[in-house]
Image 1 (cartoon, helix red, strand yellow):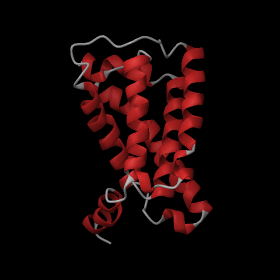
Image 2 (cartoon, helix red, strand yellow):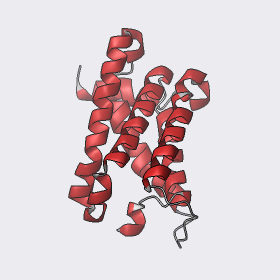
Image 3 (spheres, rainbow, N blue to C red):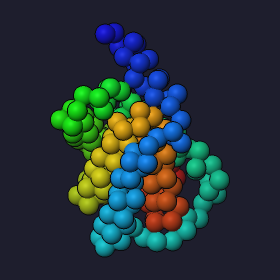
Length: 176
């Protein structure tokens, strides 16, 4: 299968599946991830509760939707996980989730080293990487079960919005 055919049948088709058509079980890992992330983030000091103060406050939701949410999920889920994984059984589901998540986790330090040196220490923090892994597994499962790339995009976007706006998250846009 050529690369273009794969992208059309996998990524592009996943954009046509509305998130509200996703079964409830596709969304279930998200609250589990959110609780785990809050506990880890607050107990480790990674999360610093407070409201973001920035002149870019109103443009940030759109920019955070595009990067990281839309672009990262399109690649790490929409490209790396074949659309028919759900029909191939639990072994393939677990394999796809683990591979996609491992690359997703590895991407974060790589991204910091190549593109944002101010984020290196943070993006190498084991607690942060554990939260990234939990998000990656949640988004992978949601994509596999729903067949919609919108479900993991929304999950990722909500995570980043809450983190940046209310929990003192690293906002690489403001730091650039």
